Picture 1 (cartoon, helix red, strand yellow):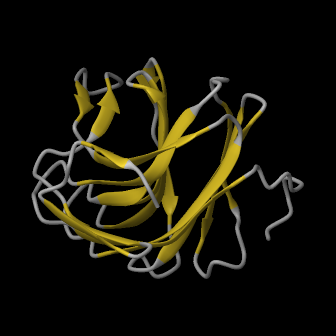
Picture 2: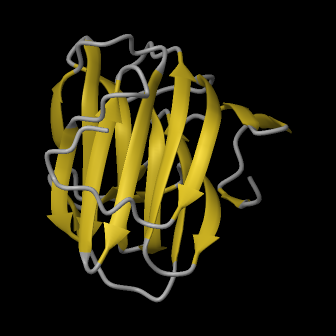
Length: 189
């Protein structure tokens, strides 16, 4: 996977198709809502796309502190993006997505799978964002469906943050960028 870092991690390696990283303290992506601040310091390995796409990646991490998170990001610019995956909150791993169009929102739900090994997928086409989260890489339940800015190109790729500490270790494997899958909303494959 060829990309460039937005906010290079404390340390990182790329071996074949695997990216491993160690996060920096105070790394995060957030804009204004509830907390009143803007953070654009999270780690994002950005791969450019030419319009509509599907991107999926396997994520392995060891979450320990509040807001430890890893997954994927889709970004138009600093004010239009989404991040999705798992995030440590309320003492457990939560399925999490933050959609930002000017200001951030945050949606979470308890995650019942192994938080140390999961898959996340984003499809963007025709002004619509579809996020899916899988515990096995085979069945892909819907995490979120939302309007998303139309752009001639996007940046997409692995994302990790640890606002409360340094040292979240994450591995990203099996990344795949394709044309939009075009499956029906309730098709879980």
